[in-house]
Length: 186
Image (cartoon, rainbow, N blue to C red):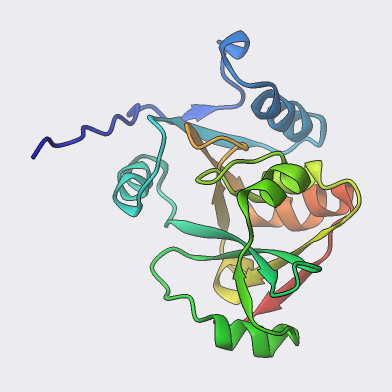
């Protein structure tokens, strides 16, 4: 069996990449928005992070625990949610459904992720909410993430990971993009 080698640049960069012309437009929009809001961030570049094992390698460089970002919907696909929770915490839909008063939750289809957040599977991120101009997606933050010092997320693509102060997300980013949060206990 062939072993896949996952590459993570060992340097933790400050700010946007110098090779901006080689980046996707949606990624560049994230950096430009964060810069315009005066939000400082550090960045680790890597191969596409497709597995928890890949994310653990990034965690070693960035110094912040893995954060799962799940794109969910109700059965009727009339309500959509982005859940941010600690990566090592198990996800139990029943517990979350009860807290938010929603019927059965499931993973939302990739087409809706692209439509609302301009993100593809594997790249779900709070940064995608900036693309949700009509507030179709409700942000759910696990209390551990809400109370943490830093948030770790992708800039709408899973080839980089950002480290951002949680206070900057709550006090600058979310008010700017006009998204509210619901804090949940999982």
